[in-house]
Image (cartoon, rainbow, N blue to C red):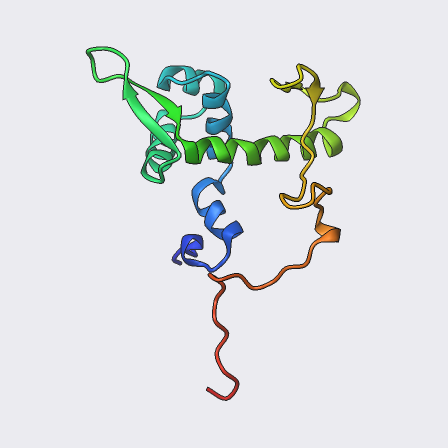
Length: 156
């Protein structure tokens, strides 16, 4: 059975899942963002097999999310976030906020986020880019965008 190609769907969520939709990729991005950038460090932190880590790193590099940079004369590399990858980390921070709220339990969140601009511990608050009001699933409408799939004409 052939796997569904989410990257070809006319859906930005599906296309994003095509890049980071299996469990290791978001964790690799989290670690690179946190400063764990070398293969051996990533493998040790995640407890992931060399084969799977190699596949995931290649996938993330191929999709322009990570850059691979040599760090010594031997063929050794470290990984850094691209602009595209840094924006995906923003998504991970939103995911972490959900996990903190619904899954952290009595112990509380495992990580806190200090905002550089004000120095305060903060969470993520999605806001409308136009009016500044909060944006949540219950206060937005989904409308077809310019890249929406075109529905076939009835009777065609």
